[in-house]
Image 1 (cartoon, one colour):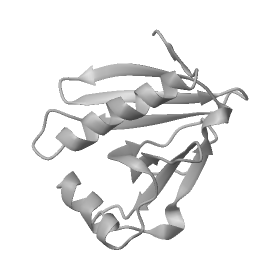
Image 2 (cartoon, rainbow, N blue to C red):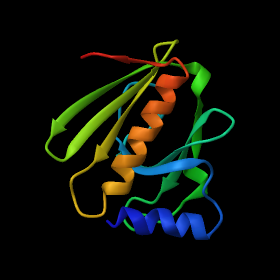
Image 3 (cartoon, rainbow, N blue to C red):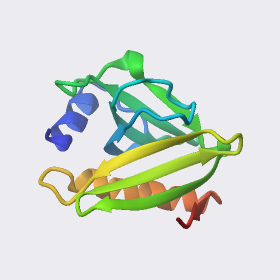
Length: 137
């Protein structure tokens, strides 16, 4: 999957909301933020009105699917953790005050993933500026 091309298609369709787009995966989990039983792909951005916006992508072709979009208010986020799974994969888990969480998988170090990895760093810096702390695992 060429992540740069996926983001470009959403941007040219004038459907991209927010800044610092990064292509991510969300695995099925019990965190109650995304109640789904299958692996999902999204383009995550941070908006000017303090939201994390998730642009839904179809599973196979990675085309934009507006019906799968959702957002999380940054004011509801308590903390995040970052864990390196292997050389090419990181997992960032965002948790809320109510105990809900969403594990985000980010691919990096592979051709076509540089922009997503770089933009995720900007998003995490923005979270820290807003007082959202990084928990140590």
